[in-house]
Length: 260
Image (cartoon, rainbow, N blue to C red):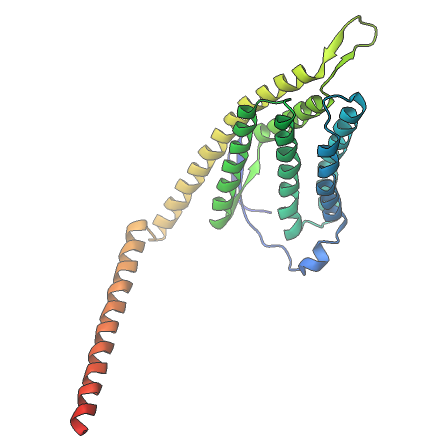
């Protein structure tokens, strides 16, 4: 991607540059995309091993989740290193991230390890930003993750890992057992605050980009009022054409009856 970028901290707006066309069948077998698919394949294992009674299963679920989270950085690095940034990858990578995080959070609610309201708030934020990015892409620019979004993601992943471990574990050289469950909840609470702040930044920069786009179009003589007037003129022209055609059909009908 290249082009103009505006914004600081929360989001960044970049114009979209189309990549060289390749068949989707070829893209799906690229190494980065295969790694992304393997991350999706790990989701059932994580959900199966979430257990409120077994230290071993809980630790296994946490380790699988941590491994899957690590592959997210790996496939992105390989895609850039091998010049394999593809249409399929741009779709699969964020999809895999959301599937693994949201499905795990839902299961944690089902197991009583996380409050439902917290997960609903986190999911709502993700869906809202996903919709915002979809609208932005239709206008020819994308919203790249800023520092706030990346911090939010890191905290969410860390909090989920602690919640997956769940139990209290003794600290080496200290006569104290640390509750991973409580730490996980606190980290998720912090991630919620940063999620809301970063979402505000996304919407603020989206509004700024939309305003700049409107100004650029106005300079070119393209305004909303002008577009409405043009559409109104087209509707009137189509209506006149339909009336003319009806009149012509009526005349032909009368001439046909006159010959009889």
